[in-house]
Amino acid sequence: MKLPTTAFADRMQDLRTSDIREILKVTQSPEVISFAGGLPASELLPAVEMAELARDLLLTDGPKALQYAPTEGMGVLRQLIADRLRDRFGLNHEADEVLVVSGSQQALDLTGKIFVDEGDVVLCESPTYLGAINALRAYRPRFVEVPTDDDGMVPAELERRLESNERAKLIYVVPDFQNPSGRRWSVERRRALVEIATRFGVPVIEDAPYAELCFEGDALPPVASFDTGGLVVFLGTFSKILSPGLRLGWVAAGREILQRYVLVKQGVDLHTSSLTQLLAARFILERDLDGHVARLRGVYRARRDAMLAALDAHMPPGVSYTRPAGGLFLWVELQSDLDARELLDRCLVENVAFVPGGAFFTDGGHENTLRLNFSAMPEDRIAEGVRRLARVLCDVLRSDDRQARAACVA
Ligand SMILES: Cc1ncc(COP(=O)(O)O)c(C=O)c1O
Image 1 (tube, rainbow, N blue to C red):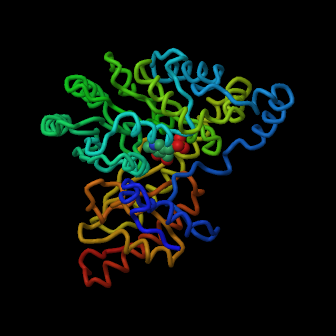
Image 2 (tube, rainbow, N blue to C red):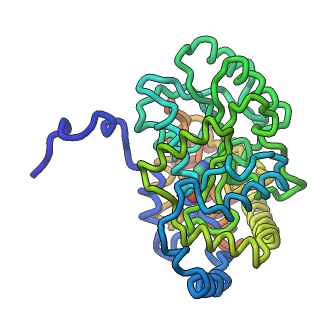
């Protein structure tokens, strides 16, 4: 029996399957060179160490690992997260200002529940993280894109939009090696964001899964480090520095806001897995998380370099791309009249996949952009995949009778 759409809540009308999930289904087979996902390198996930730790954990502290736990998270892990936030980022949150969540994706959903009524305005970067759009969309906001350049959101543009949108409820940002663009906000822009948000009294959600994955120099101070009024909510995760399968992230915020996250999380899943929380805590206490992150940085830096070298060598004139100093992604802009979705269809025939960029814009458009992930494939596959991508692109340009632009070397 087919149910009428009225059988479902109104909010379901706005929800769509994510383009990325659909593409990932096609890219499961081993012959596909996939730049589509946002996956950490599988071969670097610490499976053997986790196996040893899990066995020991279950034999020595089994009942605790297998029992219900507080919604806020296990004390030991909250303390370790608070310590890491202080040491890495200079954020001074006490352990009771940290909530452990089931991946930072859950934090995005909780954020919508707490802050967004139907018709409220969520301000975001242009482009922004697709998973945040999807999570928040269930709460039926109006998204307003804020023009964004290589240094982050343009402050005057943000101010203008806050002035003209009385119902502005949230400013959502990914300041470090953003998904999808790979860009990192300058320190000045971070400071300016806090100043403006404070003046307008609008909370900021700082989503920082890539902050530790910097390839050159140290992490920049988070937006939250400039906050004196308790308006910035900092989201972090173990997904990119340890393992996404653990489903462990955190919310760090002042107590007034954090207690609301605890309240809504209670209704969602009572608490995050006790087993994976204790496992992550043991990894941090007994193994070398910093060494592991350093190894990831080295491997991802080499993969980024391989991708940039291949793009430099093969892309035809008129194509531009970011040169990210960290994270997992870079962002490509094709000639303005090209459509990355059509290009993807042709690339899939050649067993190469990526994510067309249009999905990352809440206002639509930008169909000539695409996101490339460089962390999940070894360097030789990256070089081969980019070569194929460039060859398909050159074929498209030639077939469109745009010979002049098709000075291709692919
Ligand atoms: C910007 C951003 N936020 C949140 C997430 C979700 O991460 P998690 O695995 O912690 O749920 C991702 C995952 O790719 C991301 O890129």
